[in-house]
Length: 152
Image 1 (cartoon, rainbow, N blue to C red):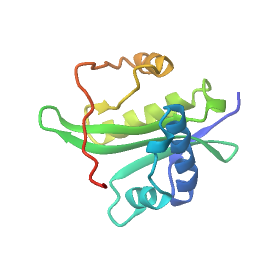
Image 2: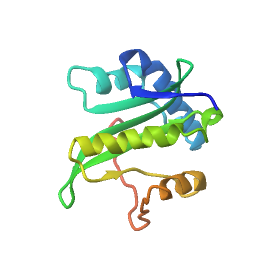
Image 3: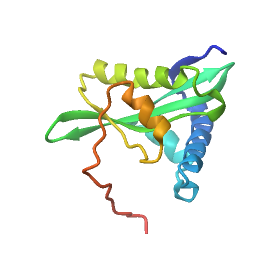
């Protein structure tokens, strides 16, 4: 098993992170929905007012995984860390990389005194369900995703 490292993302990582997100969109059978650019990603991570944090996992100096989070607020629960994207290249799964990235996010939440982390997972992604269950995650089937596209 190759060794890996997890570190905070840098501006130089943006193209690799963007490629991983594209792979995630393909895996989730929604590549047509992935329209974000490296410029928008770079701006939210490293622009004048960054509000998103990311970590990357590397094997032999190649970025093979990423976790991207942002802070949100629940009027019922208080501060929440939202795990927006979490992906490990398929060829590097089952090597502990996903766990290390996920635990990095949990540690970050604790450091910021955020007592909850939430995310979405597709109902058919049983491998992800099993991964999250190992951490004691709960799944809420009672809520539907909703949104409005303001770009049209």
